[in-house]
Amino acid sequence: MAPMGIRLSPLGVAVFCLLGLGVLYHLYSGFLAGRFSLFGLGGELGGGAAGPAAVADAGTVDLREMLAVSVLAAVRGGDEVRRVRESNVLHEKSKGKTREGAEDKMTSGDVLSNRKMFYLLKTAFPSVQINTEEHVDANDKEVILWDHKIPEDILKEITTPKEVPAESVTVWIDPLDATQEYTEDLRKYVTTMVCVAVNGKPVLGVIHKPFSEYTGYKVLALLDVPDKTQEKADLYIHVTYIKKWDICAGNAILKALGGHMTTLSGEEISYTGSDGIEGGLLASIKMNHQALVRKLPDLEKTGHK
Image (cartoon, helix red, strand yellow):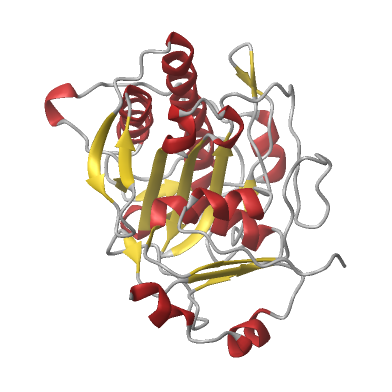
């Protein structure tokens, strides 16, 4: 095992940089060639009949369909992010200050990506709660249709419908993670993300890198990252307030890899209710997570000063 690395940062994007992202979605000539994170998709979540002909009723959601649309949303949002950046007309402005006093920036890339992602998901699943980082303008509504085709790679991994009550599902969208880096043209840090939680637990995570030059997919795991330029760490500590759309997809992916993400006190993070967590953040993989929790100093209080 590699030496344990500890990083402190107020930026949500650092969670994924240090954790190696886990699973990435890449795009080439408009077509997805990727993999996805699956966690908790066992029989306890499924209730549908076998076979592609099974159709969920209006009160349920098939997580296979939700995953397919989530991947498409991340890619469509990424298209907007890339197009705006390459036009070099960002229309950058500030939404105010973060709790740490940094400028909370927004660009046309954020706005247009958010529009594509939100309305694609909302049109496909109108009864599902969708939380997104950016404001949704009801006067700018767009109907974006989905063809109801589930990609073969998803059908191979999830062979039967996995239906859950629509009311139990919460979707978290980050239409452009790393906006500061985006404005500085540091493209490799930029992602679009979608996370699906069932009863507050993250079960599907999609992270798409719109500026990736890779064709096909690449899996990055903690302590086993093929890209030698990628930072590596065994754990990540965040001591201040953080938004759930910044961490939900990474949480789902980390769980799929056998890792853990909790508050600094060791509590599981619920992806319902408020859009942020106050209790700090601890993420780890291939380590005794609860032992780490017990050894931590009282960092939560430090982060709230």
